[in-house]
Image 1 (tube, rainbow, N blue to C red):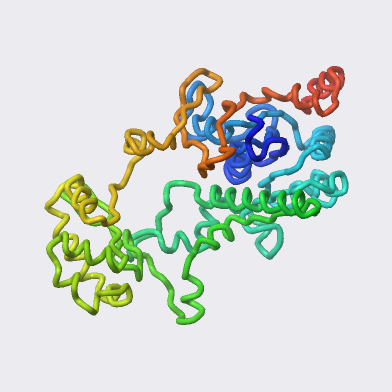
Image 2: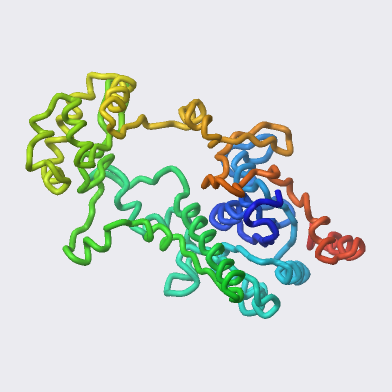
Length: 397
């Protein structure tokens, strides 16, 4: 799709699993050509993660759409030579190995920058490329813990929980994609050259930590786990209904008044001490108890209808089955369907954000392992004989 914003940008993806590949997927969705380097044999481990259809993960179908698969053994000298060849022709290289791995393979930033001064290199790792922990292994769960997210997740007095998703990886991938876009703008619109983007999992999550550190630095306050509530912001919580829980966010001043009127508690809604958030935060237990007393005998649908009538933000807690059945998702085309190489229809998130001009698109299904090895390497200048020799040695597949 030539009209896409990143059409003509070539990305070389060396990463595996989630963080680096998620960044590359984001760029691919908006038109970049992404050449994914995979090890011969099993390929990216994500191909075998979670639920498999005919031997391939359906997660893979979403994560690797719009990409080309090239099998290269990076542990062999000839494989490293191929990466250097492809890097000469690339705009962006993405990797999420442990720091020092590319240097061991002779693929350091200094080497690649000398080969291609316009190259932008995104390096995603658990702790960043520098610092005392930089060489330690760091997965999403560890980054979430170090950034303070895991400390906050859960009920007071109970073991911390995780969100059930690899937030550290995907949020780092989004930060990395943003860094790539900034670097491309600096290079192409400001006359710059290539540069390195150093994205750490824990820092990407730390960037989202709101007031945690400012409050600690000024007041010595440590925010503690609060279950479903949003500490210091009232009222905003999950409230029990006859058939489950509903989320109600009545923390705007005018919204709070409407909420209290709708549940028959004008005594609280018109109390001058509760007109603003600071007063409500001091009496949040009282307010939550009043809302919960109103919701717990009602069904979720009835509560949501009442909240819509009062113009108060509220919502049910969706499972993925609720998402798949929701008409709003469908009306906005937020779900797209892609036929895998095996022919199964896989529903997945569409391309976000939604642009009015030059929007992103799912152009191609996820590739089979090594599907584009010959095409990409022929375009890079390797002859049939050269490719045959490399394949015989197990360098490519």
